[in-house]
Image (cartoon, rainbow, N blue to C red; front, side, top):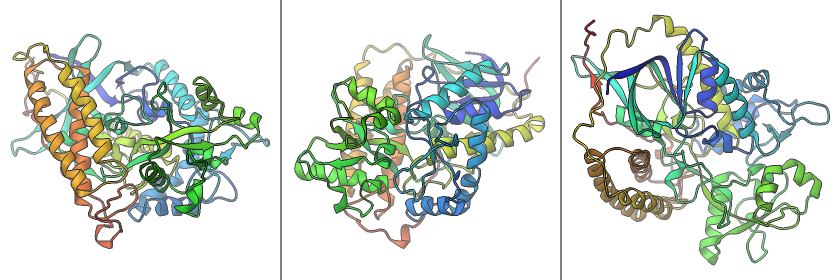
Length: 543
């Protein structure tokens, strides 16, 4: 295929990070924004809780930073945390200026709710559909911008790098993009590329995330040579609805913040055994507590109860949760909600600064795909939307400042995508089978509680899957499912390698072989990137 598109900035991903960056870029910059699914197929749109920010007189930046550092179990970068948290109020104001209306209190100020491990009520929210409202508002604004081209049903295959005479791959100049509807591969040339593809929670059998959360940006950046950090820290949300007819529906942490209580099927309130904060303990502690209760007693799930609160309050505060549960005959104003833990957030990612800058020039990674040092070993509730917005602000600022001086792709010819030697596969069951198998392996062996034996078993099982999938990838035409399977294999291996290297328990990583935390591992884990085969020589176009 020939190069058929040029753009100033290519943004991959249409969650809050990608959309905000597109809107914050100067209008004289041509932006191409691609999204793997449709409008709301992203984690932002599924986020119920809210956005943490210091907005009350009783709160302070110091308190928010302290809560974040404490929750991160000793490996949060305090400088990064301070920078992001101090930008919180201005980011809330930016959302308001762009049409987002947060739920207000009786004084017509932004109402603030409490979530686990926060010492103050500081989470701005919109009922229980914060992410959906923010996402739709920003998405509608993006569609009106003349300098932004939005392409749906489109996913990244790999990045294209520049290779100089010293064989140093240090500049990103484009990407191969797969159009799912017509199965067409497009080469896009871009002065800057921003990966905002979200996390990798779909790697696990049970998740609160949409199907798009397959770690595409993390995998593509790692294959291009970027370092990834702290991939062992996968956050499991304690409460996902457990029902055969509803998959991946989150029961927001704010429900516990408003008084929800956890019970076993035997009607025993159990959290006080694990933490004095009970249901308001941090997510890692509650998820492990539920996991332990289920495994020790053979329960399929536990229950979360908010029915002791007034019925009107529940319906008004949690309308989406109320309606969803009612659709499967669970009235949360009268009965308990069956819940289980589910993979929720990728705390690690591609190593970047707050602007998303990576080791490769002109390549930025922002949002959940990135690792800035903000979350440490356990993300504080509702800090994720905050980080996304601050990174968007800093990323767009850096690109705006450097745009006029960036001649990164002028007169450069990109290598063509070569599919001349591949054929159509008649064995697509290989992809679907391995998809399901890998997710079960990660859930059973690399889940909430780990051991060296389990990790090594998972590593060997995934090695065999990778061999089969690689053979398929290089012999047959690509598909959306194959590309995602390739990515989750690479990200799964990164999670396992990171977990094996951390010989302790800290935050979201708990090993029965090393149940205590140690000073020796009070640091980030880092895995250097692999260099892929897609590069260009310094050549001029022949006009």
